[in-house]
Image: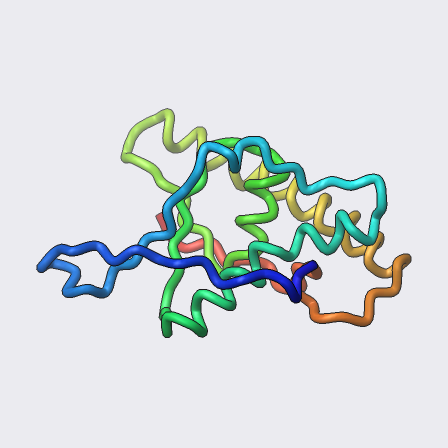
Length: 147
């Protein structure tokens, strides 16, 4: 349950450059096995909100101004949920042909698929009739920062 979620512990990067202002949430290879689906639509929809709720809890507990996610280049459900839980997306690119094609594909194919997926997700939420916190709703579209 979302209300049972506890704030994860962050690790401080001990480096003079960051002056104690860089905290890390250690990743895990187990995230690659996370499934956001369920046989029950209401549970699957709630599962989608766990990352947004965790980000909000981290920001409050540690007084964070920004949370930076580093996602692999995969178009899977986990990345969709992570990216749609974010306020901003900063795609990486170099000044070369392959990066230009990757950015074009990201905007024309991936983002449009994510928005269609989000719309389907919102339709499920409307049918279920959730009256709880909106962490799982993905009401706002993340803004894409310039590359």
